[in-house]
Length: 256
Image (cartoon, rainbow, N blue to C red; front, side):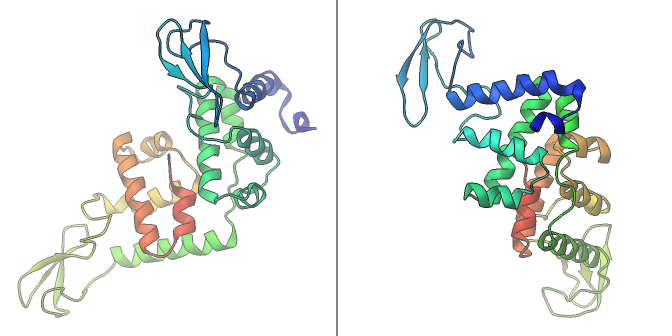
């Protein structure tokens, strides 16, 4: 049944990935992920099987050196993968697994990372199956965030934080102002996660890309930003969304 939802040319990659997920669930290990030797022994069976290699003497599990590392239980990955193909939303998957939305999205991103590294064609197809239409509650929070950012960037005469005067003028292109009365300067975003985050002219585009599900590499290419910068911005906006009472959207946009 599920094969009918996957293009014929991707069936081989799909079967291979599905087999990988089955091995992950059964915790079947063929070789040491570090030295590739096949001689190892189990040192612990619960909560998941832990092995020790007789060659390099390192400890490992079935998920070591994979995006799935430490993301138990492993059988969730197949459930999430199959239901995402079936167009099931994250919220419904989370409800069925009786877990949080954040845990589901984190595991889906692990699936995407694994596909990108091992099955590029399936990865390209799968990411276009991701839910692009936001739930009404997320859509509302998305609109709220964009409205707040737009208002913030277009603020003309905010109240001075030092003397309370409205006789203020903007300094540069960020959210910095100087009071004409007391001559003090201030930043509307001081003591927030966005303090010192540059290029405000890109903030709205960045938020759009976050909500669309773009990964760090895609965002970096679209906005000509370094990957480290994208990671920093993503983290900053995650906490800013929480501060602005948009926690569900923050979880939606958060990257691992």
